[in-house]
Every structure is written in C-alpha cells, then in structure tokens.
Image (tube, rainbow, N blue to C red):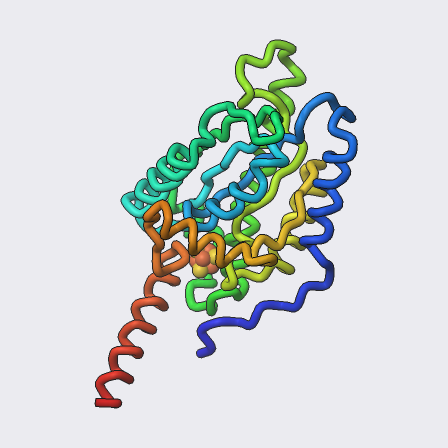
Length: 258
Ligand code: SF4
C-alpha cells in the first residue's frame, strides 16, 4: 500500500491571502481600535515556534491545544509542556512592547481535556488509510471544528456579559492552524477544510501556508535553539506504526548494503 499521498497543488496563493489580511490591519490599525485577535490551533511546539515568531507582531494570539489524535496521554502531556516552555522561553507569555513601541499582548495556551476516543470514534474504518489520506482529512476537520466551536463559545459568552474579566474572554477575529507549516500536510486541504468550517460557524478562518518563505526551515532552527522535543511521528498510533515500519525498513536496507 502507498504510505503517503502526494500533497494536492494549491489552487490559491494562501500566503498572499494572509499578507492581504495583515496589510489591511496594518494600514488601518484603528479600524477597530485594537490589534486583531487570533485563536490558533496548535499541533506541537516545533510547528508553533516559527508561526509564533512570524505572527506575534501582527496578532494577539491564544493557542488552542486540541489534539485528541495523539495516541497516549503521556505523549499529549509532553507536547503540551513543551509548548508552554517554548512560549515562556520566547518571552511571549507576558505583555511586552516591540522595537517600534507597539504593545503586544501575552500569548495564552488553552488546553481542552484530552480524550483519545473522540479521535478513534471519528476515524473508525480509516485505520489503514495512508498518511495525507481520508483519515488525516477527518482528523484536521475535527481539530478545526473544535477550534471554531470554542471561538463561538467565547463570542457568545462575551455578548452575554459586558465585563470581560481577562483577555481570554474577549471574542476572536480569526481562527487558524499551525498545521500548514508541515511539508507532510497539504495546505490546500487544510485551507479548504478551514474555510468550510469557518462558514459553518460563521467565523473567519485565517488562510495560511506557513511552510512558505522558509517557515518550515525556521521551525527547525527554533526547535534547535530552544532544544524542543521533535516527535518522529505525526500523533496517532497509525502514524507511529508507519514511522516504526519505515525505521525498520531503513535499518534492513543498511544491513543489506553492508
Ligand atoms: S497521521 Fe496525523 S493528521 Fe493523519 S490521522 Fe494521524 S495524527 Fe491525524
């Protein structure tokens, strides 16, 4: 069986679409009297590193760590603690002022309760799908659905109460995902699913292709700089088995070459 499905070519320039949105806020920062607020689904610390490095200048960001696809609670907890360590060591978990004197908001991390069965239930019947196949599309959709639903929840709560207790209770302008930084993930599929989910929830999905402009390379550099845990499988038990299979095949090939 084919292990990976080739990524679909982009039908739109998602990086350019993101540039336009950033530009519109930069040109008219007072249009809403504040910086845009972004709810960013985060898959792990290495992928989040370069995206945060890039977007913190333009958005006030909350990271939404919803990943029921991760195969064990220990792996889930390890990835969350690496994410929290990263934002602390980057110095972005506090309000600060950038070199142009612009006030930047603290980055928060929201971690919904981990329940791996939520993932297993939706991918039942797709256990043998190759990576980037139907199972992955379902997995992306589940994570983006939950992100948009959380955005709805915050919006509704803020409409019902006029006193926002903290920045975490203010409504968001956009949601997005760090997943488009991975060369293993199709930006086309992620952007397509993201905009469908956005339409369903009547929330704005922020288009992205974070792997562009050296984004993926930057995530490797930052992972080294912050000594981040870089997992060698995507997250679920099926990707872990595929990664172990590949490793065994590589070893086998090396042995045959001797
Ligand atoms: S390989 Fe990754 S994206 Fe695909 S289903 Fe597993 S965890 Fe989700």
